[in-house]
Amino acid sequence: MNLGELLPEKLRDEYATRKIQIGSVIRMYVQDTNPPKEKRFVIVSEDETKVRLAVVYFNTVVNPNVNYTEESRSLHIPVSPEGRDYLSGDCFIDCSELLEKSKESVIEYITDNPGELLGHMSDDDQREVQVKIMQAKTIPPYKKRRYGFA
Figure 1 (cartoon, rainbow, N blue to C red):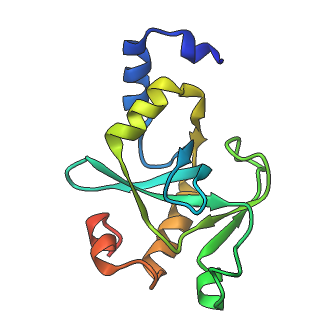
Figure 2 (figure 1 turned 120 degrees about the horizontal axis):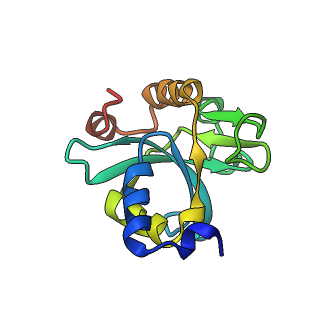
Figure 3 (figure 1 turned 180 degrees about the horizontal axis):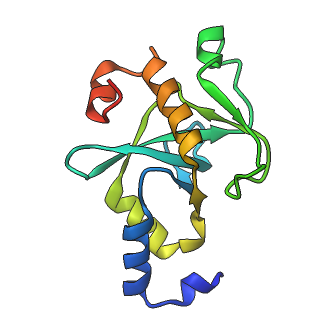
């Protein structure tokens, strides 16, 4: 338990609502991986209704069974924990896929688990991720348009 979890729920909810924004890095158990597991992700955009968030996952390695072409491997940005308090080791930001999360569910999760809001990605890192997402032929054009990447 961390200190934030001792605060009243109303304060935790206000904190989560204020802090869930583009660039926020979160650790959360997700169901959209095989197998489901705890993942770190960064919020890269939200739809115009402000209901859905677009996120990309951090991976410890680039999986050669899924990313078997040089083009798909090039959509993974290598990052180190240096200057990134939200990371505990070297990893890759997977820009080959734009995943969607309910903004409400992420806020609820951070309200209940404030320690899982790990930090905020730098502007330079955010720009690099945005460029890779725009270059990714693996992301459908409709999804890129929905989140402002086309």
